Image (cartoon, rainbow, N blue to C red; front, side, top):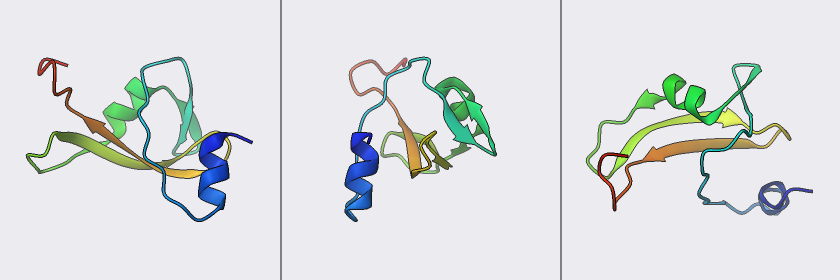
Length: 77
């Protein structure tokens, strides 16, 4: 069982960092890459470094919220 699913099944919240890979995430009933998910996400109106966020489902069925943050070290990323 993936670590995220095991923790969520215990009723706890999980915060993690995802780097760009070839992993696929389910969104709107289809598998999409992280770049495609970023394009689908709605912009967030805040100044806390959150660029956009989206509620989606991982490939194993775990419901997640993905928030895209601005890199604090490199503002261009």
